[in-house]
Image (cartoon, rainbow, N blue to C red; front, side, top):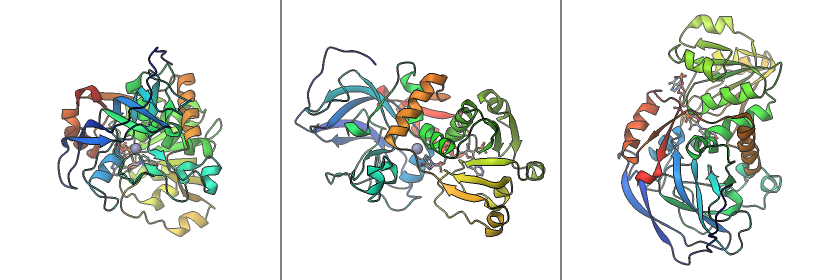
Length: 359
Ligand code: NAP
Ligand code: ZN
């Protein structure tokens, strides 16, 4: 952690932040300013250095998950440096390298919050963007130059991880680490990752580091060399029907990261008896599941959402230990619209990260 001498204590007035956001579901992203709340006693103000672009940002801002408040300021892969802390903050000080992921609060009282599963808060966690915060204000994400967050939802970024390469770990990282860990990817396990995008490329790295044999199932063989370099043992194109015959019943665990509808029956056919297909992709439309694909082999079809704060810190520490970071393309804020189009056409290698100093 970076040591500094300054340890300023909370400003009493709200601040204005430069941001990039969408004014409507169909509007291009454009510069605008937003207000950040004054630093409360338990808050940390973070100067955002980098913010990853997640496909969720696009689903959200374009209203694909339902109605949202506008302007929409996406961004939940935030990496930066603490600028100021509130009077009660003990976990952080000015100068610390920190991250913020997909949530910035939860009720802290329900069974799940008490059990350290605040991502599954029974009253709904407060999302980093587009949520109504506990103080009644709408949350705005990391496509902005600073953010104010309760200290309990701020993560330490270990020294060995450059901030720009660590930013995507805050969503793409934890969202794939958590199910791989929960479903025990490890030595002797056959793990497949569907979709080699932001989440997919992190899933490959984690599954490999956990000791599993890893297969990528991509739409084509276009990214095969990359996939093998990232750590995959095998790479198949799902556009080729022979893939589904060759791999029938092969996998203990499949992580589906695809942002669109897929034929779940075909992919469930690749799961072993008692294996699981875990969906982390979040298209707006339902994913129909043919029940016979499940019951004939006692297969599980499951979902998984991000991870807890403790597990996110565990994942960041695992990354530092294993030298894992995201493969990124850093862009200025003026290229966000172009980056979104490239994400939509599966032309991302493998995460765009905004340099927030350009805001
Ligand atoms: P991404 O970078 O766009 O990657 C998605 C990949 O899916 C693409 O690179 C592509 O891989 C494949 N794909 C895209 N469209 C497809 C289609 N029509 N048919 C088949 N394959 C297709 O997106 P991401 O940022 O990784 O996010 C992926 C999904 O996870 C999004 O829906 C996002 O909202 C969701 N998400 C969920 C959580 C959670 O908590 N569960 C957290 C974060 C994100 P190939 O080119 O290799 O085929
Ligand atoms: Zn995300």
